[in-house]
Image (cartoon, rainbow, N blue to C red):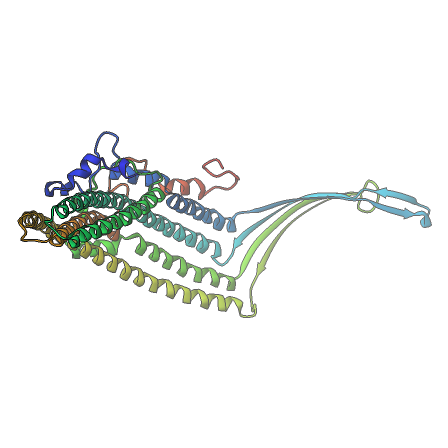
Length: 463
């Protein structure tokens, strides 16, 4: 898989300071996968995101369910049976009867204490909250996709660096062995070179294992195996200029906060729904029925009725009062959860903003460190040739250079990922903001299709 991600030629280039900028880059030919291309695949096919969309569509159906409370209820009934009638004692003989009936009844709620009205408003608030949760899940999916993408690039570059290091250490061991054979160095120098090579191979194994893990995570989020990945780019141009401005935007636009606020609306409406059970209920029931052979052969009767029923609750054992108090406490909890969501969003934003600033500083520091370590390694090697440095000095300088290159690779990865993290913490990480080449999923479409639907078993999708 590593060979699919980065060519061996580019891996060789990682041995020079000028190629460090390529440490996160893989072949960028026509077939290379871009960050936006990968995120578009995640937006369309990520199962977690699609499951959340299905959940929103299910929540949409709670609105017509609530509206059913003030819609007519129509029932048809029919019956048929057999009875034996013996009238011989009265001189009438006996009869076989087949009594039956058919009828239809219509029940219409006229007033239910505003229960249905408040239930519909509550269902609508839950729909709005579900949409915000979906928007938050979209953010999480895109952030996970960007992270997985950059992890593969980072770990691929790290594998190439470690592989190149092993090759250098193998050459170092060969040269040390040759010098030992001619008496220029001791057996200790050979042992040190052998130990360094063994350590390098161990580090390479760890790097390859980390790459496999990152590839598996990429497959989980994006939906396909990574092949050739183009460079990842920071999206700092999409971010506000200051942290204070970012906080203001996050507190007003983040979907987690908006979802919590819709939860408050739903909880407060639940109080009214519970209280409606204490109010009078007025309903109208009409029926039309026809029965035959109920008493004598040929007997048939038709009946019709219209009945208005008023129910005034007086005392129901205290259940409704308890349910109302419970709903009020739940509403209070929902209001507190809004403050919790605000604090969590602010903390996440400050953390990701700080991490982004730190990553940019680390890139500058690591770049300078790499350049200095390259100069130091070249000098130590020259000094070792004239006996002023030992083999261990060379190996230590080689390891320091490798470590600084790996740190630079990690810092480059962190800058890109943290830029996406900041945009997510603000609440603006979306397919539209990133200009992904996808058809935008509109959660309002399904809602409009079902909110006033009276009948039908098939979903708008045809299932």
